Length: 334
Image (cartoon, rainbow, N blue to C red; front, top):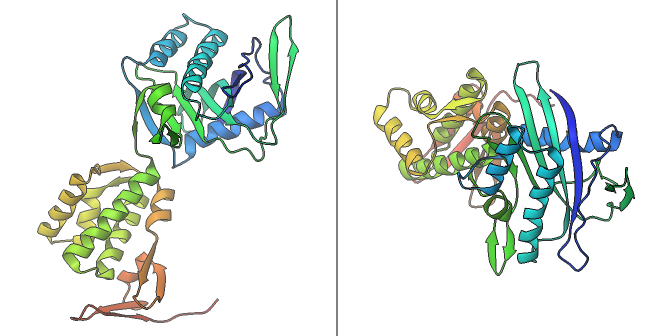
């Protein structure tokens, strides 16, 4: 994946006494520090499985603004200034939101797979000891410079808006902030004014939780059943290059038992899990590759979920009283 930074600008947003400072000049995108920082965090917004996807509400201010920018009716600097002023107004109304820098960048992305496009990245950089500001006149314009912590900084609020098509979908990172005693996702709800979807990690975690409840209810927590479902998820993700059909997973896990398969799919649907999910192989492996058995006496056994289907390596026996035994075979120490 190749990224080309086309424009970037930094604004200082304050609600703790000093006035906010809005830059009149863009950052030096040829600077190695600037380029490294922006590239690092844009790539995270593209590849991070914890990223949520979102879509602007039709009446959202930024949706209209970015539509005008996308169509060439507005320039980068005036668009970035309007975006910063909107966040500044929200921060002054809700002082629990910490002061920050707002970095806005126009980025072009290209890939050997043919995917890519034009994006606008909006990053909120909460203050840390590593930040240091200075400002200077650049052609009689105020330019804000910043010592960007490109090697250590963690961005907790960021959006990557696709500047192609009418929908302009968003990749989003955020966390809740306590405002007036309530936990609020101000970045998506108040600033972007968009509707979010669960991230790949959140979707996988929900499938795992629902599967555990399903096996508890219908199979008395039989670890063989749990391991079969996990193995089916792993096989499906590998065969379909990260795309998971839960109907296929149920068919693999329960084979000819149509009644159980239908019940599992129904349980997932009622919990809000879509039947077809682009989870990605990495997320599926991280969530389902290992199976854990935990006993009342504190004993824990972890093993690759796929081993449950190989009787020559692992034998799990469930007894009428609810207890189980686990026999590991053919172990070769490393």
